[in-house]
Image 1 (cartoon, protein in one colour):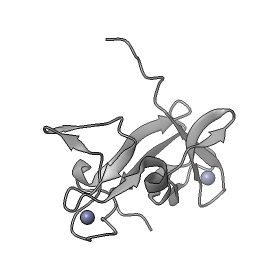
Image 2 (image 1 turned 90 degrees about the horizontal axis):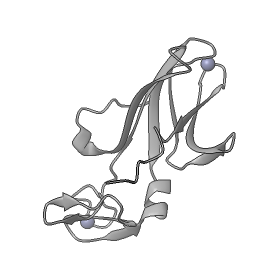
Image 3 (image 1 turned 180 degrees about the vertical axis):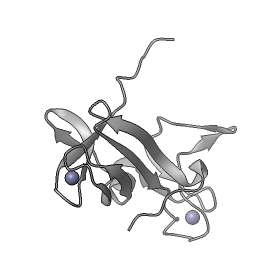
Image 4 (image 1 turned 60 degrees about the vertical axis):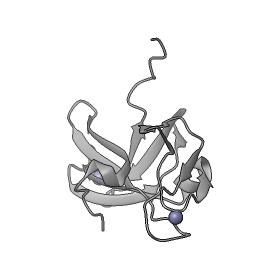
Amino acid sequence: MVTEPESMEDLIYFTNRTIEEGKGKIKAWVYKKMCPQCNKAKMGKPVDKGKVKIRAKEYVCPECGFTEEKKEHEESLQLEAKYTCPQCQKEGESTTMYKRKSFMGVPAYVVECQHCSAKIPLTKKMKAVKKK
Ligand SMILES: [Zn+2]
Ligand SMILES: [Zn+2]
């Protein structure tokens, strides 16, 4: 079963959105992982002079400095979701691997409805605007 997050500080991913123009909705999140090396702190993106390096290719433990490559780290995490399924209209909870798969050609985290097995894709909200 999933545990709803209490604070954004514990998360490396969070989304809350409606599906198919309101036919369903989904809230999904991924908790930070406890450092497997020292077990004292949660791992996150490296911080440089108080700023999180969002585009960093690795995650680090702020306590002991243990580093894990981004892909490896993310694939060891679980995405948890609570939703109202757009297909069967039931409320459900599911978990899936925190890894984008190709869903109809679009990279997405794919949550499966626990009732009817409908696939609920979480695509990137929109293409990142690269200007500025
Ligand atoms: Zn550590
Ligand atoms: Zn369903």
